[in-house]
Amino acid sequence: MKGMSERDYASHAGLSRGGVQKARKTGRLVLHDDGSIDAAASDARRAGMTDPDQQRRSLGGDGAVSGPGDSTSYLKARTALTVYQAQERQLAIQKKKGVLVDRARAETLVFRLAREARDHWVTWPGRVAATMAAEIMAEVERETGASVTIGTAVLQRVLEAHVRQQLDALADLRVSLG
Image 1 (cartoon, helix red, strand yellow):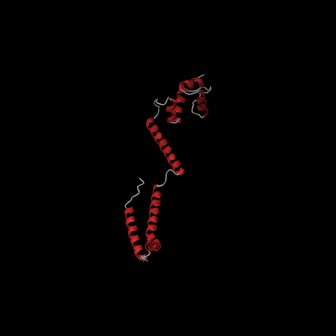
Image 2 (spheres, one colour):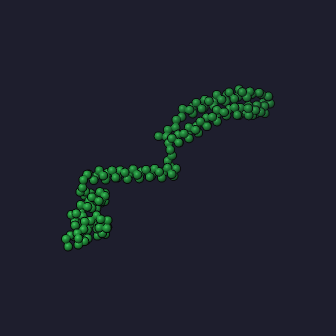
Image 3 (tube, one colour):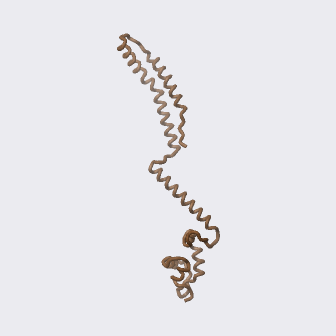
């Protein structure tokens, strides 16, 4: 036998026997004519064909990886990518659940709601002035017995002035979503 057996190579490379068998099936080992494993050539081929992250794990997690380049920068980049992808997935899940909303859409909806409320209040005095004038005249007549006339236009102007004053005070409010 020119080279090593699977068991010998497994202990040499720090792999399980199943790992050696898998490497043999995938062509990552160099074999002699008699089927034994050429250890030096197999180590070189495995180093070239194996993911640096897997090489690092097979060496116990903190051993140096042979080969060109700095493996720590690769691992840092891969870790950063994994963290970014996890955060991206978490945001997508939160968005689907309704926990997160699009900021531009939220600002548009708040603006539209404020505009609708303002428009409703601006037109309110014109809608209720006549009814309020009639109710006030009826109430005064019932309590005093005297007939009183309240001009609808006057009451509407007074209500509009007070509503505009209130809306001006509300206009100073700012919604901050960030």
